[in-house]
Length: 69
Image (cartoon, rainbow, N blue to C red; front, side, top):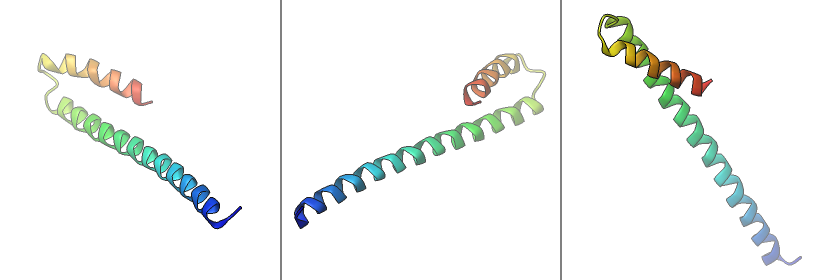
């Protein structure tokens, strides 16, 4: 193979690896944001457990927690 051929192979591998790594970071960031939202909602539930909206929020939180696990 000539130098240009090797450069094309290297660029293709680099592009694929970069896309894969970007996908991993996006997934990690999504789970981090979801975990923070889940924590804030649980903290709200602990402060306002008598509200009628707390029942709905508790159901939604259970669904989010189930999807994350």
